[in-house]
Image 1: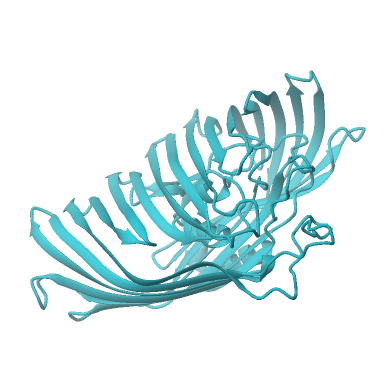
Image 2 (image 1 turned 180 degrees about the vertical axis):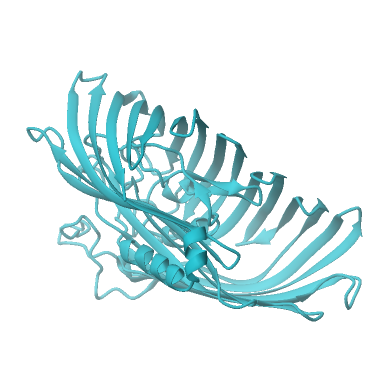
Amino acid sequence: MRLLAAAIAATVIAGLPAAAQERRKSIEPYVEAAQVLVADFDSDEVLTYTSVGVGIDASIQTRRVEVQLAYKYEHRFSYNRDVADGDTHSGLARAAIRVTPHLTLEGGALATRTRSDIRGDAPGNLAGNVRNVSQVYSAYAGPTFQAGNGPIDVSAAYRFGYTKVEEPDISGVDPTQPPVDLYDSATSHLAQVTAGVKAGTVLPVGLSVAGAWQREEMSQLDQTYDGKFARVDAVLPVGAGLAVVGGVGYEKIKITQKDPLRDADGDIVRDGNGRFVTDPASPPRIAYDVDGVFWDAGVIYKPSSRLMLEARIGRRYESMSYTGSLQWQISRRSGLQIGVYDHVDSFGRQLQRDLAALPTSFRTPVDPFGDTYNGCVFGDTGTAAGGCLTDALSSIASVNYRARGVVGVLSMNAGPTTLGFGAGYANRRYHVPPGSSIIAGTSDDTWYAQFFASQALDSVSSVSGNVYANYFESGIPGAPGVFGAGANGSYYRSFGALSATATLGISTFDIEGEGNTSAQALLGLRYGF
């Protein structure tokens, strides 16, 4: 994360004229220290610790370059070993660099922490000693080519992705329960090309053809995903911004994995980090295999350049499929986005898909007790309202799955006031060879919502608040549903290069009647260079 962020910033800045650099850039490295207090209402335990961090906030927004980076490394110092010492990384980077009128280089990177085992604790914040949480790193990058000077529009893109997950420091699952594998790392490649003509240029009907190939290799159990796709779409305008659309295509998807190694008693062998050991004698077993035609049809409604609605129904992945989107630019700095999706995915591919959908200029809710980058991210322009990472980060899945759901983000920016609301529902049905894991044939559901508000009081002070709630339900037999919620509020004041923050918060989670509620307080100082 740190190397990618530094490389992006250095490349962009070096490519700008000196005057443009001075006029357009905003780069602030900083150091900060904070004192944190956590009071557990259930055990009456009070923990205190000090955190020290270094980071950078950077933004470059020009006609050809759009880059934003926010990254922080933090170390916690415990008192009397009541709180474990630890290092954490959190950050988000998005970049789009227009090299020529037709060629753009795009990338993104994420460092965050989230729930590891789908059956265990789901802490709403990360203050104090937390269980069942893993550090996650993910990044993608690649070029996009687009040309449309004649009657035919042509576009092509390539993306390389990488995702890495560290093992949790403290387990949140009863060790007597059957084990669930832990994610390690994966690399992916995506290449796609599209060509089309708009309605009325050559024919009354707009036509497009597209093809794509995607491959992912996961280190856990030598899993591989290989997907090849081709489709043809038609668009028929029927008047008043309304058009009928339809498409038909062919796809071939194959997912394979090897069996875990078992000992003499038939139990799965795990390494020192808790991950399943791959059986070297196992042949690749098919977890999912589809080869055939798919189709969809629907409508597009676009009464103006600021509003577009699309809805489709079809048959794909051997069942009915529903997709759609709404994009509404309410004003220059406010917008609404809603998406309905249906994909065969993995944790790494879905996380990179969500990351690529985030804007290159964003605002994130202030939450010093949690991880700023495992929920919703809000844009500051009406054309890019933002997105949520919660559907992928609700828990880390170590196998492939079919992902279906809906997510909506509302971002409103008016002078000194910023408001953001995100909510969604996600379902994952796992593709696993029979008998290889207790999650074979199961699915899980996640409901989530988040509200963020910020108000500048004057040129040197502001207040902000963040409220969230989520519910996760696993289909594993005996796995309980988990509800989590919390809220916090912060006051910020600047004294030049030095600034201070005071925050109060409360959080709770409940696992079928058993849970935890705690209050948090933080006082921090930051010095920017």
